[in-house]
Length: 216
Image (cartoon, rainbow, N blue to C red; front, side, top):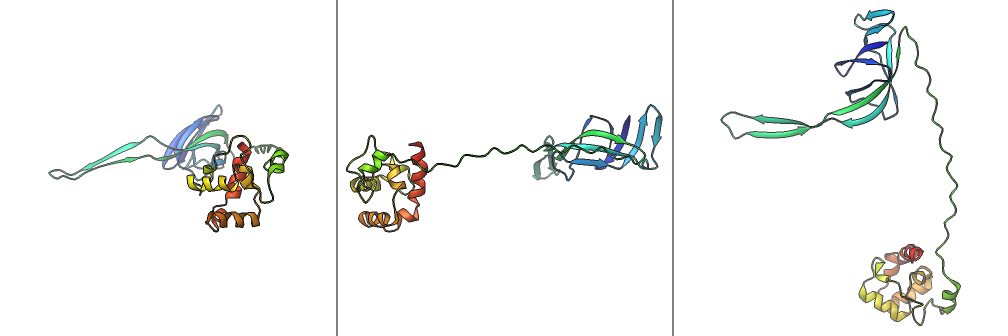
């Protein structure tokens, strides 16, 4: 069976499983659309011509894609004048796959709802790991007498430059996990030592250091 439908001021001859490109339809990809302007129905039983449409007939399709068509170049100019204009235009189009052609007021078969995948339970994110050996070497202020292994590049923290990194080293801060473990009173004391009150809190060094400590 085939049909001739009208949409967007144009006529299309369609059959089941055909894909047609029509003027933009207000529907998302995967949505079902129905064309009621059926001008003609044809099949083994004969041809039915509408007056102007075939009563009770409809064509059902599924939106496969919303896209833009090929670019069309538009040129404008005026004779004996320097007026020149060049513009490009891409028409919005909808790609529709025809799923069924219905006559005599029949309804389209109900589509099976897509089964939603069951989300996998995510394991709780572990807090940044701080080795016992590291914490054991720290004093009450969270400081070290020297770096344990290779010192981290603290300049990766937003707000820390070469000068501030040097001051942190002088204060006994060499690693991301040290910054991530700083408490409120330790932060206040460190800010006073570096003569930058509020800097650590304002730039949120602790949260940044927690992220860098995961990859360190």
